[in-house]
Length: 75
Image (tube, rainbow, N blue to C red; front, side, top):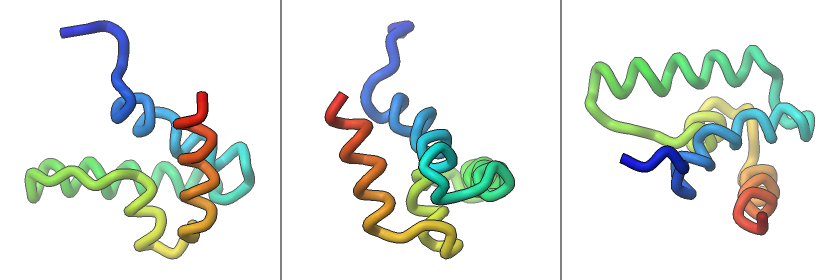
């Protein structure tokens, strides 16, 4: 296994932090979302991206998601 994260892993680690830095969500929103993500992985064996959960919770909108992704993938 490589020590260097791929694009998906990088996205997952950075998306929430960038959303906070941009003022789109709070740290509490991110913590709640991460808890949901882990619970779903354990309970249902499925993995949803942080952005998808934030959108479903109404904490972020599609334009904000795109702005974050544009920044991540333009690096």
